[in-house]
Length: 68
Image (cartoon, rainbow, N blue to C red; front, side, top):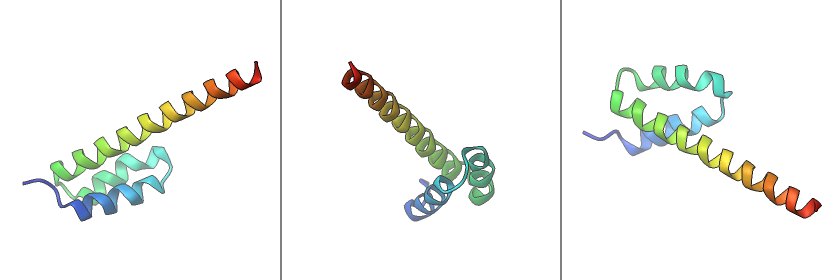
C-alpha cells in the first residue's frame, strides 16, 4: 500500500526545515518503520537537492555570462 500523502508531505516539509545532516535521522524516526513512507520522503529530499543544485549551477552560469 502506498504511503499516505499527508504523512509524506508532513515529514518532507518538516525535514526541509532541518539542517541537511539531520534529515535522514529525522525521516527514519518519523517514518516509524514504514519503509515505503521513508523511501518516498527520501526520494523527495533527493529530488529537492538535485533541483537546488541545478538551479544554483544555472544561476552561477548566468552570473558569469552577465559579468563578461
